[in-house]
Length: 270
Length: 272
Image (cartoon, each protein chain N blue to C red):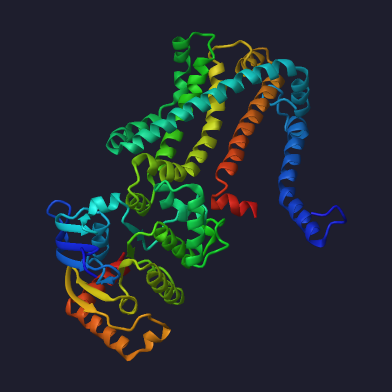
């Protein structure tokens, strides 16, 4: 598809504090409409920061960020994207239905349209019947589905996901991967997905962006040519393993395992 | 819920209830027996130290007109102080949470001010409002309530997960909207905890404030004058009423809390 890219990053950098840590350096990336792009890299490579820069939650120190052909700030004010964090970030004082309706409320949609949309969303994430529940009454996986429903409720063209399934068990994670792909296909949205699981990145994406740490840079981009739609069998495909290996080698080439080891050591010590 | 014979489940629930409350009832009975007989008869505690329970109960009945009138005056002072002090405290917390540098600059002084023995000001507030004004006592109660409500509200308004704020930012939400939808609801459990503490403080402030002037019929004055006349059973009866008012105030807030925070896990788990 022609026209401006959904996300266009040119020479983006981010330094935290005055003369402090360089989190990101020289990031160039274009994401086309309908793509599913994963950002993968070791902890501390700035992938979450990059996602927040796209969403204008964090301001870059340098470079240009365009979303839908507009400056990131304009895109945020126009509510061009939905965001999903690693934690579900649901409000305990709201029911499931009201959590999903939150962005619709911000858009001043009237009550009946809101209710209709919430019902559609509950159906999409298969949580019909739970609208009156409070978030803490749901399991972790269900909570994350609510937060996905909330992000999608106002049909943003762009979905930003920051390790959304990172805290879930493997079974739930695989099921939600399938659900996310189904939703992505149904809504035709563009997804930028941060993860540190290689197989998850390969399984979900049309392209995997491999990053390195200190400073955070893009070291390679791996196109994923697995057939769509992806199924449970995709994970057993020989090509799937080849691509996983390819991404893993790219990660190793960046010295990622070394970083992971030091980080694991740090965490163990603290 | 049927009107016929209770089912086994209902009966075991009743047993469960009794088992839960029994220890408290036993302690209450032991307390009354000790007060009525053990202390005066066996341990020879004199009436000026602690009058017998039945004497206090008699005084409670005989002096009911005086006590109820005094209680009503003091109760109004306490509630007035609680409402005014807590309202100003919550508004202050909103301002300090909204303009953080301002809040950061003032916070150390607020915490230090919390350590001031406010009661020490009681004689001075009479000079401000006049010896007979209820406002001196309302002021004492209000100032006592102010700091705990301020500190807790501010904590509730600011201890919001960063992602909750980032989410609101992603919706291009205004500062007001973020307060209404995130910060204020998040603060409510903290606010109610503070209000319960403040209700006790308000009662203390009002009674102690009575000691230094104001209406000659207030509960504090009843305590003071009955002590002067060595009618200790009346003093104790008045103290008993002050305690009951304190518990009632606390209980009312706890009830409102259960209603307002019906969404809160702790409330819902208690209900089920």
